[in-house]
Image (cartoon, rainbow, N blue to C red; front, side):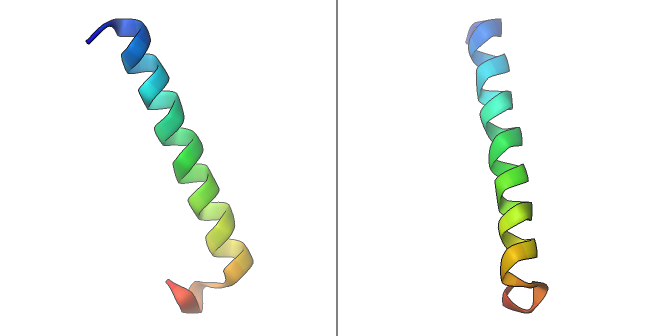
Length: 32
């Protein structure tokens, strides 16, 4: 794995985590 690819994957993961947290706030913690 190249360093550039690792950085790209890490960026995607962070974006996904942030999206999940935003969605949880919108839906409400009761659905988690």
